[in-house]
Length: 57
Image (cartoon, rainbow, N blue to C red; front, side):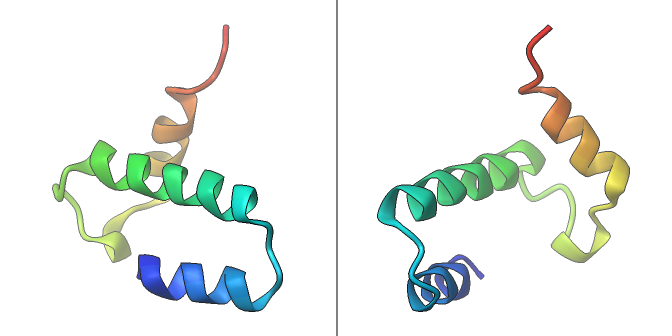
């Protein structure tokens, strides 16, 4: 899936820094779940919980 994302962004003329930043988020997202859930089983609440970890108070 990461390879498909990289190919898609490269083909759409995304900058290297944009691609790198998005790949960092994808890797962090994957590490957050540590294979406890399949990608298809991840819901809106799971995504919100992940994103709230980065929220500055």
